Length: 171
Image (tube, rainbow, N blue to C red; front, side, top):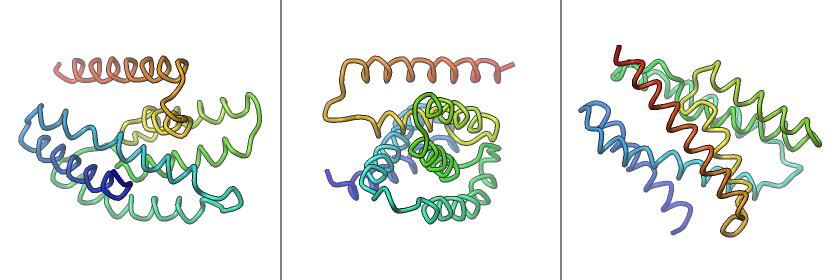
């Protein structure tokens, strides 16, 4: 599949997710949540191809602008207080830009600060949006054993966090 086809499939899955949310149809939500992984993968592929000398400021500004514009219809029908995925991806771009400027342990610190910022700001998918996209940028070929173990750990942590939040919200 081309990147464009993947983007359109992600849009359709996102629509399924939103309809599932409005109708409280959990199977639609599960299917629809795959859209984020596709958007993250396309973002990662595009980030890898950008030229090192190109500043991501235009990309970040566009993501923030459209994220602000999209936030209004995002919260009206669903009364969702989370900040939409475009702002999540802007935070990803800001963090990655810092990671590429830094060396050694400072890179890890930039990722940690980015993940904490995602949680504090309440962006959609929180720390997972950053971790998942970063892992997709570092995916070379089929991924090494360490990559797959890390991917598994990150997804288990995220699923457990979501379960805990869901269980807590039932009270």
